[in-house]
Image (cartoon, rainbow, N blue to C red; front, side):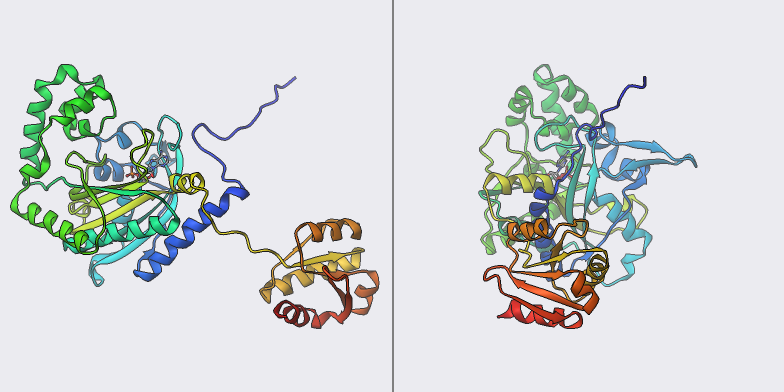
Length: 426
Ligand code: AMP
C-alpha cells in the first residue's frame, strides 16, 4: 500500500493564518500612509531575477549570495534566483525603465516576500516579508537623514517600543581601501583568536568580520581600527551633515563605529534599527544606507541613492510582544439569512448588491437551517439580520430583524439596502 504523505510547510517558511493577518495589515496600512505622504511610488518586481543581478549587486562574497540564495535553472537554461533582497531589483528596474530621465530623485517603495536559505530560528526565516523605501538620484545628506526619520517615525507609529538607531559611515572607494588595509593588519595580528569563518572572511571580505556574532571575534572587533578615523574629506563632511540633520530633528541615535551591514554595495552612511537592544536576542528590525555605486555597477549611469528595508515578521513579533493594538476587523453589523432554494438564489444576488453598496455582511449561504443561521448572527454580534424565506422570495421582499429588540419589518427587496443603511445610521 502506498505510504501516506503528511505535507507540511517547507522548513523555515510559514503560513500566516487569518488571526495573524491583522498585525501584517496594520503594518502594511502604515507603510502605505507614509509612502503616500512622502510621494513614494509602489514598485513590484518579479520574485525571480537573474542570479547575476545579486552576484553583481549584493556581492559574491556576502553570506546572502554565497550561502543563502535559492537558485534554479529555467528550461531555457537561465540561472534565476528567488530574490533575497529588494534593492538590486529596484536598481535594475530604475535602469531598465529609463527612470534616470525622470525628475530626480525617483522615490520608490516595495512590499513583498523574500527568500534566504538561512538556518531557521526565531526571527530568521527562509521566506519572510520585507518592505523598503528607496530614493534614487539624490546625493544630498539630508535625504539620508530623512530616510532615517521616515523609518523611525514609521516604527513608532507601528507601536515599536524602545527604538534605537545605530549609525556609521563606511566611506567610499577613495577612503575605504585604506581602512580595509588597517583592518586586515589588525585581524592578521589577532588571527589566532578568530573563528574559522572569520579567518576566511579576513581574506575575502574583512569588513564582515566586524559583523560576526562569535564572542572571540567580538573581542578582536573591540580593538579594531574605526572607519571614522579613515574617512576622506568628502565622506567626513557628508557624515557630519547627516548627524547635524538628525540633531536638528532631535532624533536619538548611537554612533556605532563598527557597524558595516552585510551587503557589498553600501557607501558612506549605514544604519540599523532595534527595539530593546539590551536584550541578548535582539535582532535588527531593519536597516539601510547609501549605495552610490550600485546603479552604475549594474550598467546604469552614476546615480547616488539611499534606502531602508524592514522585516515584517520581526515587526509583527515586536507588536505581539508588547501586546499593542493592531487593526481590528470591522464588526459586521448585518447578517444575511435564507431559507429554501429560491431564497438562496435571491441571497446570492443580494450579497453582490450589498457589496456594491459597501454594506459589509456575513452570511451562511450553504446552510439550510434558519435557527442555525440566526444563532450565528447572534454569535458574531450582528445588529440586524436580513431574512429571505420562501414567502419573501416569492413576493420579492425581505425581513429585517433587529437582533436586540427582536422587532421585524418587511420591506421590498429593492428597498432593502436603503433601509438597512438608514437603520445603521440611526
Ligand atoms: P537586510 O536586507 O539583511 O538588511 O535585512 C533587513 C531586515 O529584513 C532585517 O533587519 C530583518 O528585519 C529582515 N530579515 C532579513 N533576513 C530575515 C530572515 N531570514 N527572516 C526574517 N526577517 C529577515
